[in-house]
Length: 533
Image (cartoon, rainbow, N blue to C red; front, side):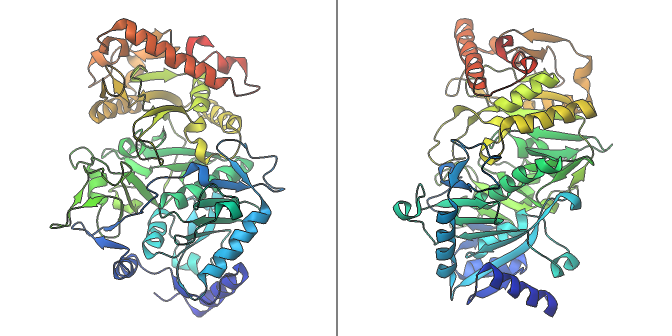
């Protein structure tokens, strides 16, 4: 592909200014060429589906304790520092940066130039630099790809440098381990080292957008989004493993995006140009759109491949539960390109309750939506982070605390303002367990979860009766189209009523205890939580 002399000249000047020189550069090369290079370098193999299969080694999920934000004049008073947003000094950042650039001398790098954000007024231009061809293919498929004209005039606002074979020395570099993710908002640079898990690149740029956009009155969200045939937009919030990707990939609706969006005065826009779907236990019958998207140009992470047939074995979790597939948005039939939508009519919060006590579906008021948004209750599922072997109950504010640099109240206020302004309906759907906790009960079937989602979208819940759950302070429908009435009341699915009541009150108290950490919260929001607290 010819990018023109002016473009290449500008590119090398930009690279020189960035400090990278004496390297062999592959810039914005086609997916098939990246696949060929990756296989030649033994980075991966081509499967029977045509997809590129790779293994990420030690790191098969995010490393939250290795992610840092540089503490400087820009971030010091704006970031919610603590267990999620770890501070890192400017001096230590600069030392690692210089060592990484030195490490690259006389080596081969792969460069992708593109954007984060499908709405032109609220996107940032990025440059992704990798030492692995397959990771650059991932970047090309997951971020927004530029037109030829946009590429010719491309000026990166943020640069992400991900070098797999560069390791930090914790006792020298002040890192937690040999791996690191460093986000520098002042210099507009992201550095990633020692981890091959490609999700770190995606989530680092998501964090960048989540910090930048509120100052532009744009609400950044960890959610998926789709649109119906009549143009009605719906949002799906939830942490990894709660069903955002699966439930938004609806054959009767058009996909806007599966993970990261902004809500501006114009409507919804996707941050990405692709999808990053979990594919453990993937079945064509249940998730045909994802199944069919795993083809030439797609990247499979840590999926076991059968040696004789080269077929992916999606049921094999021997490498990790967090098996992934990355592919362009246009691999999904009917996906919206450019990926933008109108102001949403329905917002759905997805949670995977491992205790098995939350109602499968409930309706939220504006205050209730803000409460549950700030709480962000779910269960961390196996494989989404290193060390997670079975579901663990957790609270992750904004349904995405690992990616939200600002205080939760900043994002919650934006949500409440949007709900009020556009009269958006909000529902909480539990895709977790029923009939008992994890290990005793069963996970709610995706068929029934889909039916509940459909009911919210077509408005059939507007005409049914609701009962009030006094423990969780939630309004629960007594009937829902295509869902057995017996599962709508979680208590009825347990064999022991007293055991249910004990577990339900335990979870409700966990909500209350967790919410105490938020300061200066209006009383009406507190009262929207369990026990009317």
